[in-house]
Image (cartoon, rainbow, N blue to C red):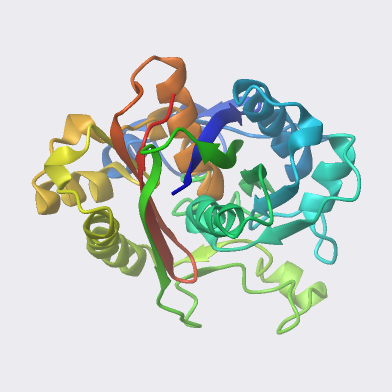
Length: 328
């Protein structure tokens, strides 16, 4: 039976670092307040001339190189994002153009912060079907474009970045062992941008009311996250016929230190085995899990045969986890 997994990973973060001290200059907050409540110290913001597709392209090129394939070997692009370049054109098609590729199918996927996990499951299914061989999955965001710099509760949380993975056939016995994704659909302003869509098109009033920026009910997101992060990881482990003790590392969505600490307690899994980089990048939504994974590979923290979990949760509300026996 063919084994399907990740053949290569790449990530990219913009050069522009925005620290908590930079926020102190523009809003009523402090480095201490942000750090103790979130664990975030700094984040990256895209430059004015960088769109989501630009970040995605950089990550994609690295993933292709690390997978040791030619870019022409990619036969599909899935881009998970909540911040596409345009409302009415898939940013995946723009990435295809920027990579110099033609004719292959491309589409955007919006599952907010769980987007990368959703993308991996879709890619896995497509490769398993035999229709595609090398699916490029990207999670990329320019959240700096949709955060309200006057709202101290949300603007300090988010950052920009991109991560990519090539999903295809790997050595037998390695790769994806268990996958679980799901959603608890809501329309109660728990986490969304209220205006700019078909329900509430942007006009003078929505701009004046700052409805074209992210709104979030922090407590409700927190309660959801601490419940589903352990739940969906354990569901994926069950499908993989493994226990949490069989994991060498968990890569959670990098939203908030307190969420991850709570999940570690609930799962009875050591906190130090949860990979965390949110202090440096903040919450990069669909890019966060992939950036964390890419960093860990660079640092030599993952070796062939390691069992790892990638787990996401976010707006929608969505959640998902994949268990992987690392193939290289």
